[in-house]
Length: 354
Image 1 (cartoon, rainbow, N blue to C red):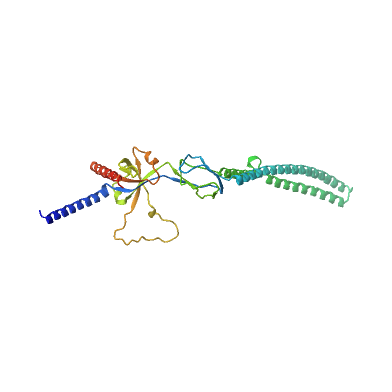
Image 2 (cartoon, rainbow, N blue to C red):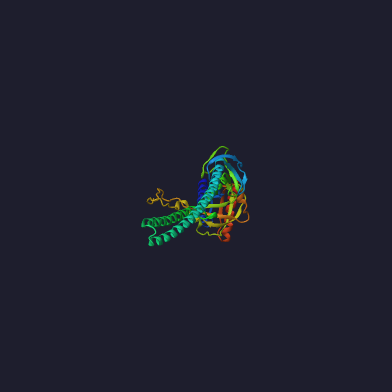
C-alpha cells in the first residue's frame, strides 16, 4: 500500500470517526444530557441591625459557627436606655395624671351635690315666695328676685354636670384600658423593643463569612454588616431546554464534584425551576423590549433543575457555597443507564487533570 493510499485510509477513518462522534453527541444531548454548569448553593442570611448606633462589642470571628439566637455584636445602649427611662417616666406621669383627673371628678361630683342642694333650697324659697306674693306679703320685685335665684341654681347644676361629663371624658376608662395609659405603655414597649435590638442576634444556624465588622463602626438600620452562610444546601444544574425533553421529577442522575475527582454520586431530579431571570417582566410602565440577535443560530436557553443526593445527603451541606459539579441525567432504559454511567465515570477521571 502506497503512502498516498495509507493517508487516504487514515482520512476515511477520521471522517467516519468524526461522523460517529457527531451522531453520538446529537443522541447523547437528547437522551444522555450532561452539564458542567452545576453548583452547590447555601442560603446566605445578611445580618442588618434594626436600629442605628455605634458598634461597641463584636463577639464573633470570621468562619465561626453560630446558632440561631446567638448574640453577634452589641450596639451602644446609652441612647436607648435613656429612651426607655423616658418612656417609663411618661407611663408614670400618665398614671399620676389619671389620679389628678379622678380627684377632679370627685370634686365636681361634690360641687354638683352642693349645687343640687342649693337648687332644692331655692325651689322651696320660690314656692314660699309665690304663696307670700299671692297673700300680698312681698312685692313683685322680691318674687322676681327669688325666681331668678332659682333659675341661677338650675344653671349652676347644669354647668357642673357639663364639667363633670368633660372630666369623665378626659379621664377615660379605668385600669389598663385607659387611653393615656395604653399610649404610654405602647411607647414603653417600643422603647424596650429598641433596647433589645442593641443585641444583634443570629436568625439561623450557619457560619460567619467575610467578616469585616470592627468595634467603633457605625451601624445604620437596614444596612447589612455581615453574612451568615446557612448549613442548608441546594444542588442545582443548568441544562439546555431540549436536553430536558425526556426528563421529569424523579429521574435518576449521577453527580461528580470538582473537589472529589473520581467519585460518582447517585442523585434524583427533585424539581424544575419555574423560570429564569430572562423571563421576568417588571411592571415599570415602559413599553416592551424586543430581543435582537445578529447570530443565525441563537444561543440555547438553559433551564435550572434541583437535585438531591440519594445516599450522601450531608455531603453537600459540608461543601462551601459555590462548589462546582458535573451532572449526568440518566434515561429510563438499561442501555442508557450503562452509557450514562460510563460517560460520567470518564468525566470523573478527567477531574484529576483539570
